[in-house]
Image 1: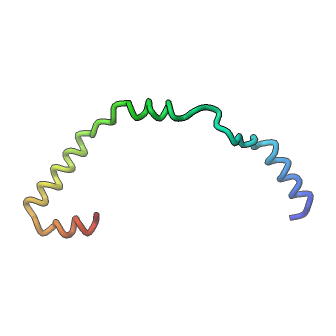
Image 2: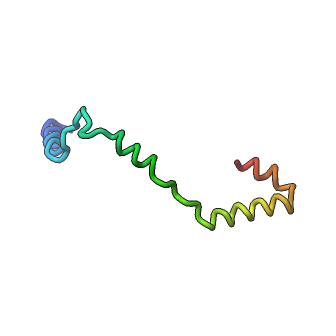
Length: 72
């Protein structure tokens, strides 16, 4: 690139990107504590059904246990 293009790109970057603050604008720890205190998400019924199918499959066909362990 020539100097004109370099200068043009530099000017566009200065105009469109705001400066980065080295200090945080606010303390993030209280927000993190609030998120930790919130109730965790419930496990959907579909996940329980899938788990039941896997357990049933392992009970009925025990030869699949090494196959399952291989894929984990």
